Image (cartoon, rainbow, N blue to C red; front, side):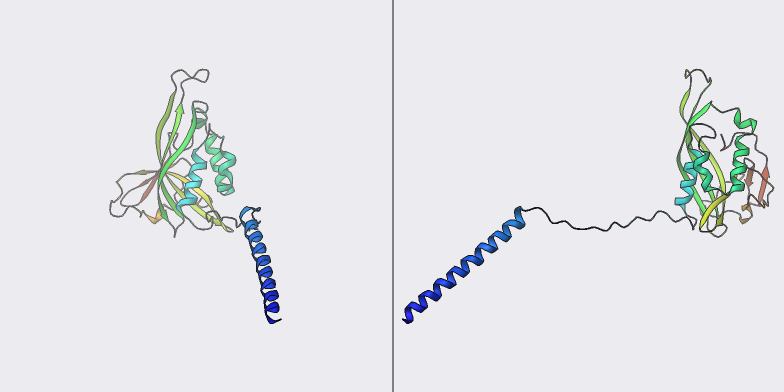
Amino acid sequence: MINEQKLQLVKRLGIGAAVVLLLLTGFLGGLRFGKPAKVSQKLVPVKGASTSALSTNNVTHFLMEYYTKKELTENRNRYKNLMTDEMYREAVAAENQPVNQAYKGYIINQVYQKATIYLDETDLTALCVVHYTNTQRSSLQSTVGELKDQANMDTVLLSYTKEGKKLLVNNIQNVAFSEPLDADNQNEYPESTTASSSSNALGTKPNDKVSITGSGVTSSSATGKGGHQ
């Protein structure tokens, strides 16, 4: 009688173990061959470069929008929001000058390449040696004789001002060095070079040249096309 009870108990335990084994097998098989479970992902937006602090990133962004253009005036809508309203009006006036209008259609496909940038974060100015290329044509009716990918270089002094949380360009001046930059101190230049479009201490306008010498800053009216083509 006792042996029969033991036998029934063993049978029940065996059946239970078999059921558990089958369930485990089915569960593991489902994990291996079934459809992958959906996992919800929360996308975190990547923040862009700060526009409230002067940096090489926002200076480079401005130079790219300002120098890259198919022809004169084509890029106004791109650089407009990077300037103060007063600076934008001065830039447009400079582009409308006869000396610059004379080149319209003859200098095309201008592309910003690179720049060496010296920052003055205290006075919010950036001294930029800008390299760019363009195509120069001798005729508006023909592409014969046009010179492609012509290398050019400008040196400009950008002055910034804060409007709300944004830094905007409020003055652009062409720069000519009467003396070479000190190789041991290339990131410094006279503080008196700072000028704004609304209160210009040098009395200069866009396309005026600013000469930086060892003794200070002088200005002279530009006669060439400069950076505004």
